[in-house]
Length: 137
Image (tube, rainbow, N blue to C red; front, side, top):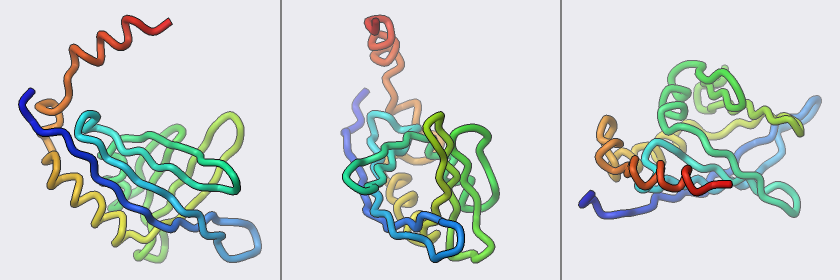
């Protein structure tokens, strides 16, 4: 692999949807690392802690246009087309958040500048990842 490693980051204010009131602002750091070219990490800063979610870059890209995902993370355009909705489900609870579509699309565009769609396999070292898995307890 001769591709130069790089990381793309953005901070976006998401809105945590709550019943009966306006969404509560939640700062989120998005990160895309060319060493894991299929994934995006979102770190939501809630209260005194940080909750990290890892999901596919394709999930975010598809979710900007149509509902997608079946499991822990679902992404879809909101009724207001300036927003994208994230449904997060975990054994400890769930949350529905919204984020500005334009900011998400700009972040996603920067990730495609870094690793073009369809070229992820050229950046991903499958042998290294298999080795990591073999040494886990």
